[in-house]
Length: 245
Image (cartoon, rainbow, N blue to C red; front, side, top):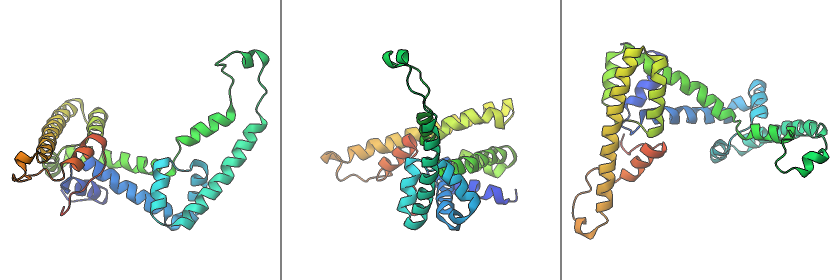
């Protein structure tokens, strides 16, 4: 099947010899979102309006800082702080004094608009939103390719499996993306791929451990030298790309 623009990144992820091609897709999207956020776009009014409102989660503000554009990040954090202060001050003015009965009763359910606003801000992130929107399209494209492209279906079946989180995601998404019968077939294939490859990495990790025993010091490492990194990817979705791939 002739490759289309929207299928290229999905195919590239499944061509990469990684322990989870879905992690590879997510990593690529996240890198693009971080680049976009600190690129020329941060000076555009429509982008700044959203970053001012949403801010960034702990994970992504650290990643933005690591990219080195300190001025760009400072500008976004400053205008975000301006908006946050303004919104908090408006809500502080509307705070009502505690009623005596509520004050004396432990665990009262008095509504606090400032706390509610700040709690929502804690789960708000411009980068997360951008990643989520693109990732959803990639997952839909992956299912479309599986259903319509025999070459991709072969590539899917020959991949090295998935991390736990994305294996679970694919099982949950398949019924809405595929017909009932095909979803059942997809889940069976996906489950077999996941289990076989989790066992493979587990065995590599076991040999990695054995290599620290003096009795195995002269034995070859086989495929276990990076078993720890690959195991972290399987279990915790921490992206790892082996050297030379």
